[in-house]
Amino acid sequence: MIRVKKFIKQILFRLMNIYLSIRKDDSNVHSADILLIRLDSLGDYILFRNFISELRNSSRFTNCKITLLGNINWKELAENLDGKYIDKFIWIDVNNTLMNLKKRFVFLNEISKQKFQYLINPAISRSFYTDDSIAKVSNSNLKIGCTGDYANSSVFQKKKSDDYYDELIKIDDIMKFEFYRNKEFFEKLLRKKIDIDKPFINISEKKIEEFSNKDYALIVPGAGNPKRQWNMENFGAVIKHLLNEYNMEIYITGTKLEKNLVDRLIEINKSDRVHSLVGNIDSMKLAQIIKRAKIMVSNETGPVHFAALLNIKTICISTGNTLYRFNPYPEEISSSIKYIYPEIIKENLNNQEKLKKFWMGSDLEIDLIDRKEVIKEIDNILS
Image (cartoon, rainbow, N blue to C red; front, side):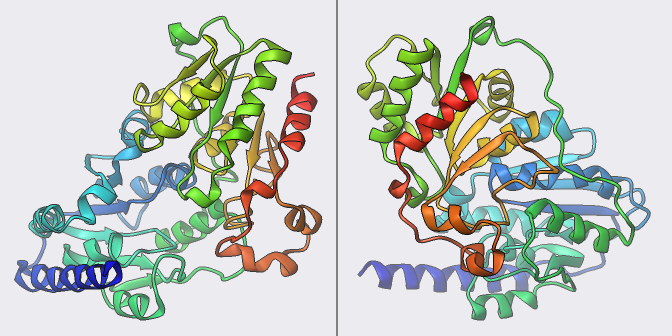
């Protein structure tokens, strides 16, 4: 029954896309505006954002105004750090809006009414029901995307959505870190060499009173996929070790949907030195809190990318999901992240050929990772 409902919903999504694309006004667009789409997660944004200034100042898009259609999860960060390059922001709660029939229609209908000279979708792993659907209905003269891969779309879906674009930029198929793939896309888009060797982020030294003058550890127990979430009992043991051996304050962060995980950890470690940040911080404040942390222990998720660029000592517990693409960080970009993988990955990390199946994902059990190994690495960092 669930599969039938999902199939019907997908059919309705496609019919909606067709209807909105047919009824939109296809008259010439006279503005020199760009609709730049970026709907994926915080980590994806961090590894992409340094190229926005290059787009803004490029000779190919001279005098173009940029509208960024972005994921609301990194709204505050983008507005604070990149507002000087963006003329207008459109924010969307991707799952809440685009996966709901009524909200989806209202949003896509509104997008279809706006005229742009260019649509640029730099996502390498395009998604048929999100960014590709927006490209389908958008009233833009020239739609540019990436040839991409099949991480978020089936072969049929990708073949279909390739036709939504007027120009598809092909990037190399070799396994390399996402920042370098983004750089390749923008160099080919802008038709020039880009002199940015690694991603960077400038977070102000602004003090947050609650976090001043104290040593604290930051714990990140959630992840985009439950299969990438280390067991809460393991995280609980890590917190206990930090409390007993290092007398540290503990802050646990996560999205509102991860509140149950944070509450569970607080229940496991009943202490007035263990604090929840769920619902109290935005993406900008999270970056500032990470910057002042003594150590962070996290699953493989967005905050790890902050820590890498801010040079914060971090232990990342990972199944090796999208190995070499998002993890581990290349040494020339950051050496502050210590990744702890299941044994098969740890033993063969320098053999890309043997581990290439993890490039598109991992089905390894994350709880194969022993808490003792994580605690040992904490001691190596803090002792």
